[in-house]
Length: 120
Image (tube, one colour):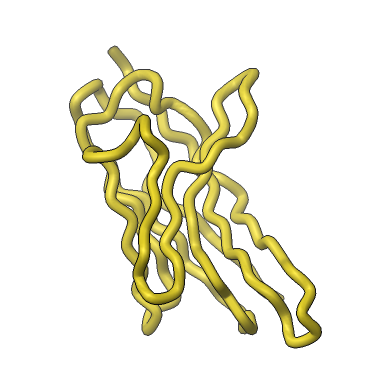
């Protein structure tokens, strides 16, 4: 059974940094991308950053230049380094794995989420 487990969230002052980590256990066939999403209270879940097979990365405009996503295939981890944090970055952050199985059907796996709170 596939599990994604996030860690590294917490409370930080504006301007500070946090590093989130997502560890994957279990075997997944056909992962195309690993990413981080976030959901603030009363808002929809939104993409923060994604890293695609081959190393291409994409970021939400609101985090470009401040956040960096990285992936270690040998360790089955994907990290999100968050610098210059702002109060508006406060949200629950979720790890995601997306791909297609051997039958060609798409899948999405999600972690349980980790809270990031940025105080002003």
